[in-house]
Image (cartoon, rainbow, N blue to C red):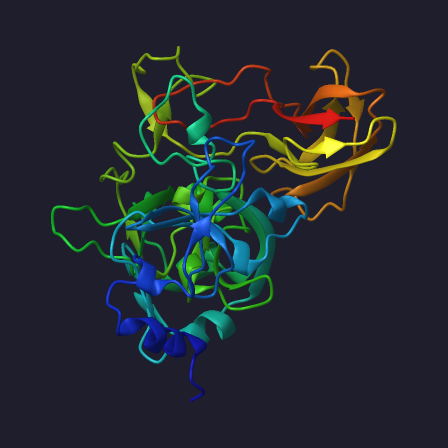
Length: 406
């Protein structure tokens, strides 16, 4: 059997103990990330982990690596630039495909143990282009400040995912009467028994009604990077990345609503129409986070850029939502007093990044605030003021960047 590249990966890092959590694990010494216009990220080190390019380090135990915004000038995020988010430590360092199995257990007629080859050959191949975004993306911008990882805006990425439909796997196992949800667990196991295993759940109805919920074994035409879930991960288009369980090892069908730690109390939002409460207050009740909000970003020019007065400037960025699809993107150069439509790039699917572009000519010298907002297919957009919740989730405010024309 041909040797998996992940076995080479394991030999590279295995002798160093816990994966990618110290300077020893980096291909080269870290250097500071310079982005003077963004105080959330300024001074954080750029690090290069196996299979990755330079990413912004937030934490190393477990690894949390943010994608620099320059990579969002295109719809597809390169595998090597894709953000990394783990919840427990240590994380998997390698997988032997000769022994790895994906188990489907619980309330099923025929429990399964699927090899990597089984996953690729026993089930029809399905493909979807979809954004995965950390629920806490942009948490560092919340005011009042909240607890949790202080992400900038780069805890997100968009890829073409190929795999087997989850509902096909469950059909092969034969879901028994009385089943309510399926739970998902990966190879990342915490070092101490007091730390809860990272286990997530989905309603069976959510799985059965959406053919784009897949167990992916390919990302942008290649095997998944180890840090993004090799050999297989769950893909739940339109929903936050907390459900996209990496390094998937077991799917269990259960007869109840699963409410252990990573479903409750973790990853909850206020049970209000906006998922928000008054800043600084606590919600009366909460529900699990699920669908992503509408977002759009200006990537070029970067905030703080200097441009020539009276000369055309190319504006460029991306927009996305929770699965309805982006219908329109608008830009403003006068603080939101007036808006004009941007040109949309190719439609890669309802759950994908949508590129947008526009040309703006600063009429004279001075400082300008450029703004962008998106509208999805059901009319949802972004507000002028950010909504607030105590976990720092669901940010979807109109984003802006400042430039100087001279």
